[in-house]
Image (cartoon, rainbow, N blue to C red):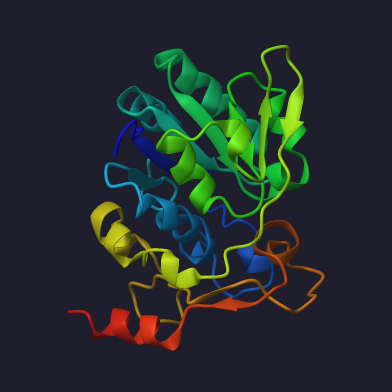
Length: 242
């Protein structure tokens, strides 16, 4: 592809035994690493052939090791969380120090709700609110930020622009399956849910949730309440693969 940026998709390091809050409603700590973060990152990674997914917590990758990875990439896409945002911003700053040319994008619930909070930090070049698959691929292949729906970014005079949101992805069959990226970039033996067979990793055939559970942030901040499905033919074809 012309202008393809080598992209690092990062679930950043966190403190030991942090599970993203999963154990508050689910009988398995660490499950959240497999349950949400790498799967969201693996969809756009599957559309950028020279990309890499790093799921730092279960692979015991330190902040120092993560920062040094910025030397090898032109774009870093960091999936942040509310609890980890302040540390993730510091990681972005450190990445810019080792590679001032790298572009840094933040995605995830906190920057969907309050994109200005991240953009006040000069290390963050732009934010993608809600779903980010095709926006990241578009930017990595040369589309200007001004033309990408759901993107927030700083202007040259220090102002912040919030592009209008685009429609949700209706045709999930257009997204790659995450299994190839899992195999390429993740050590699946690092993932575990104690009451299931080890190793345990998740794949999803839908997005969105019509339920209105008060404890769950995902439909409200990321995928929306419209339930969208991969086609049965697409699912059957994937599981028929060797």
